[in-house]
Image 1 (cartoon, one colour):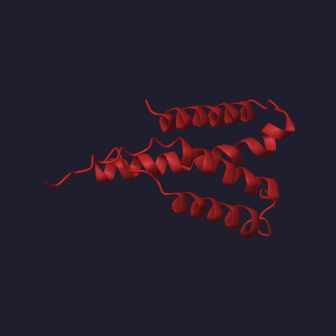
Image 2: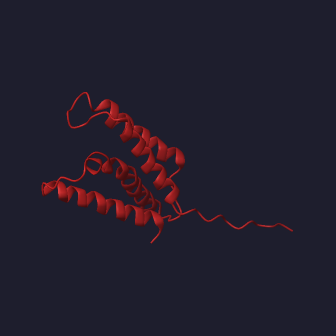
Image 3: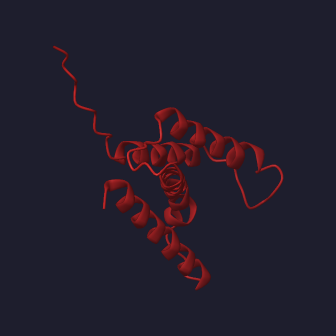
Length: 124
C-alpha cells in the first residue's frame, strides 16, 4: 500500500470516528469540532478522485497535478467559506478553514507516489 492509500484510509477513519462521536453526542475539543474535517477534506476528496481516475484509465502511475490539487482547494474555499455562509447558518466563513484546505491539499500532493521516469534511450 502506498502513501496516498495510507493517508486516505487514515483520514477517512478519522472522519468516520468524528462522525460516530458526533452521533453519540460526544463533544470533542473545540479544535477537533471546528477544524479537523477541514484538514481531512482535501486528502479524502482528492484520494477518491485519484482512485477513480486510475481505475477509469487503468493506469496506476497517474498523479493529480499541483494545479488541479490547488484548484480544488480554491473551489472548496470559495464555495464553503464565501458562497454558502450568507445562505445557511451551518457554514461560517473562517480564514483558518481555508488554510486547512490548502494544507490538506498540499499534504495529499506531496504524499503521492512519484511516477517512475522511463529509462533514457541511447541511440547509436
